[in-house]
Length: 370
Image (cartoon, rainbow, N blue to C red; front, side, top):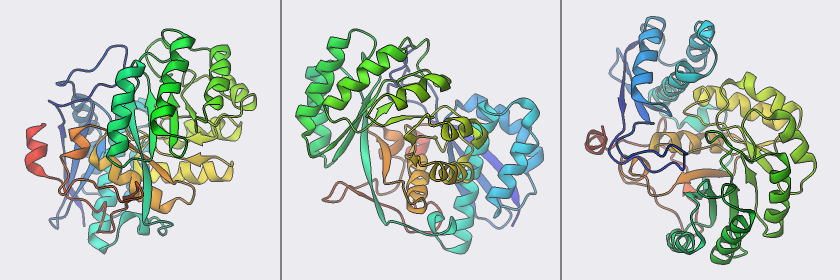
């Protein structure tokens, strides 16, 4: 089975706010769907956390290397693409685009073999996983209302990030956390994301150290991206001098970038994004590296239904991955997949057990947003 065509469409019209300093508009495109077609009529789908113009430009480079390759050898073909584009620089649009191609190829392999991707990755440790509702921070009053709404929807874990946190005052930071803990209760998980990959992030080590102590007092489960994403030494020192788990890694790409953070003890939890890092093939390797270094992998998942589906398959195949990120209120997650997503009475998501990624796109919805 050979690859005959790769196409891409960007999602627009309902792009949710990202919390960025230069805030997103609904018409901005930051998520692109990739379709890999074969000479036997099987098509796989993937997702890229990158603007469609950049993805289409990357495909101009990648297509000569890709067309005619075996469609059922995702790991080999993805590594072939990485190795033959290294001179353009690891990371960025080319690596992001390979991520979507890799996801789509695993989808094809699953469809051809009749197996869910997680089983093809070596086996399923779990059949369901807890999603955490991921939302932007706000002033305490509106934040309370939003957390209450998602709690009533059945979520039992919550992560709030960006917004005014770390950007106004330490007093407001604590007011936000106190309000959130009161709403979600002591029996539910609460995580905090400072958003250190924001443009010109000003949170430094001393702020992060003080803030980590405050978060620990409120029983916060982890402190995400408290520092700029490349501040390796400060991450190492922060983790050594705090009790709250420290997490990060969502903007790193390819496994080589993660090695120093894992080997030198920068993270308790590492958070690669499957739609950026190099796809399922690369994220699985990072998961193995993390396990060898005593670090859990919990995927970053502020993307699309296809990204979520890939995360669920990875969660089934990685022993320590017991949570996935669920971006609340995004039509690109909730509306573009046939049947949508449903939490069970325990606030868990079933991991699809159908062939490939195990989901079917609603192409009318895709057309509406592209």
